[in-house]
Length: 277
Ligand SMILES: O=c1ccn([C@@H]2O[C@H](COP(=O)(O)O)[C@@H](O)[C@H]2O)c(=O)[nH]1
Image (tube, rainbow, N blue to C red; front, side):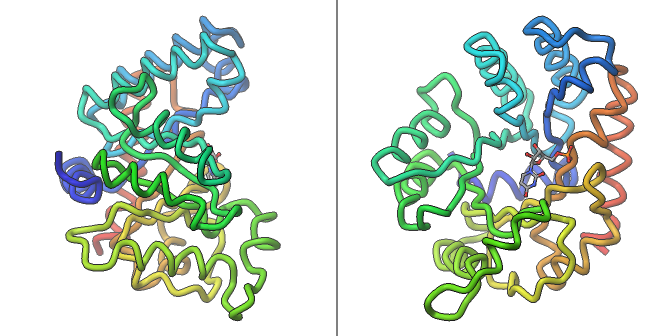
């Protein structure tokens, strides 16, 4: 199989630069006329698959919204991931895992080994036990042609207190995470497999993103206030690597399949105009 970076570039070239998050909030279930139950979760997920699978480059299910329903929720997540992949979208599982290396190895197997029931194309990880502790997940990603997105500068206002703190060598924690990704992606074409999560809401923080050579996932679009026009201030010269991510703004258009598709196409076109000039 081709590398994740190659597959991601092909998907965004074909379908446009857009990631849609699948976040079945109880409030969204209610707005769609669905119960806050496993049945409601299943119906919500089926509609999202019908509307968007194979039509957007990347689908990003938020694991937490499935986990809260226990094993039946996880079963629906497995089915949603598999259907989106089969339809031709890449699936980035938003699980934000991170632990000591020996445990991270199990997370890597759970989410990236194609023989496992919850295998996706990529996952999100948290680097706060040290990027070195994530080594098994980078190795698994390489072995399975998968991707890893490391939290660097998150979209929530609380993130800066940790991410802007200085390390012993004077860099911020975030810059150390960014530089680690750049080192891992060096020389990859067209794009490395190690992505970063950089919130669309953070403005110009003075971090250097131009050498990453990997995808830059930009959550926080729409509901959290991030805009297509605002991406330039956050990403500067790194704009071509940005993958904007919307959840509630697109999902709020449901449950009509046609309206969900139209909402996704609208934000995709707004972003493409900025990212591709
Ligand atoms: O920095 C981050 C990292 C991840 N997220 C996740 O993205 C979605 C955002 O949902 P919206 O409805 O578009 O606000 C959600 O799953 C978060 O956990 C993030 O927001 N910021």
